[in-house]
Image (cartoon, rainbow, N blue to C red; front, side, top):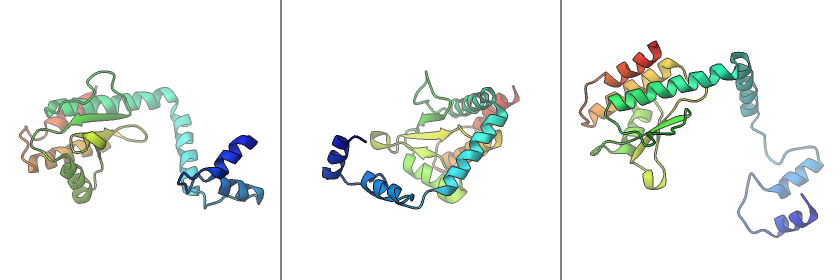
Length: 176
């Protein structure tokens, strides 16, 4: 950083911990880091990049697209309104939680009871939307298991639909 930037950094009263550049500067002078680096995350990143290189980006993107299509087909079959019906991302699908269903309890039950993690909404969308990720090394049966669990918990929470319809819709996409 420039001398002017360092002066501002030193004078700043903003709370900081990991991103404290003053601590980083002192550690670098000793050829060290201010905190234990996340070595396992760096190793995992290297492995993920190697896997992507082996597959090729076109195949990686095609897999994400297929996972997204299957997830969205399942949401629609379950009667769940997609939060972003157009221009949606192949990284995640967000759907509105049905009326009468506690979205926070839905996410918590899936995670704590069945070991399936999806995300809920944040801020003003908390409890109102669910988000299912399908980017990264997610495979068909990860999506099928997630949809199956979602169906089970929705049914337990009193939401009415034909059990298995979401899984069926996702599987039909995967069979194409």
